[in-house]
Length: 383
Image (cartoon, rainbow, N blue to C red; front, side, top):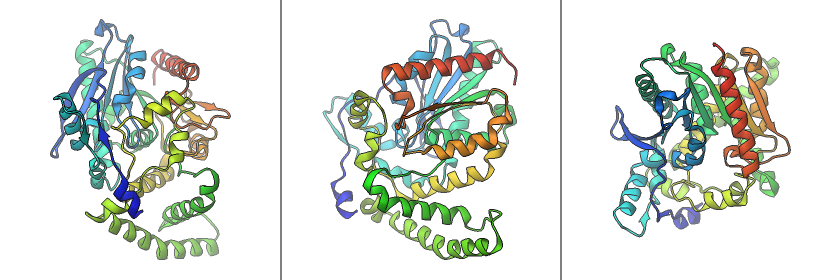
């Protein structure tokens, strides 16, 4: 881990990809959130508004082709969430430096902005702000005709969006969301493939199990309940204390792990897309452990309450994805499928890649058509 921390480099050499009209939305805290918007040639003709929500450690600039696919008939927007893309002060400086003529910018400290993320609440705040801005913009363009609004989310962005819709008290905003598309949602813990998994997966399962049972009975028989609670009460404070220690300033420079090599092989079924992803230096490949722990705890909290999720959804996932394994999607669908008549699943049988929206051209076209058809069906019906 020590050598990994010393060797890590992130050098930005190109400008950040801009695919739409830019906006920087002020936040209550110091800083702003970077947003892009793309519209049809005649915005008043748009049938709906679509917000794209990116995943963990990536950025909304990657979604230019997806935005353009929908922008001939929808108003499409996307935001870089807290600590990501141009909402990350280090990456914003990198972009501006390259724009000003510099040949390279050292962005190796960009991942440290994750240190502020103990949970996903800052990102849920970002989502609410982005939705609020998009809805106002859409209503103004349509003369307050209240176009339907949809969310297209990926991975951690799906967890952020789903948990927001599940717990928000802003009923006026929630009522405007006519549906959400989940792509490879982070509803489960990673399962490391291959020989590494023999060593790492038992530890991942152990930490997930103990946090899931910590002070939360699961209806198991009393002897098992007592065993689970005792195990959790002893180990969880030790785990959390250690992770908090190595997430402190100074130590987090050494103990923040980099993405293992196997991850890049499971992002897409397209070698071209995998190469593009490897060469994208606005993607962070290192994580503060406090952030990782916060994501795990968010997954556990969401799973505890997910049966109450009632927004119509299209769920797209790969059968053999090890990054966000299928069991999380299966569990989610089992308790929510009947909550709305338009809830639908698209399982990619035999596929193991995580970024379905960045599949090979033929498969991506099939997925985009599926999303298109599902949105059109929702637009033709009431809630």
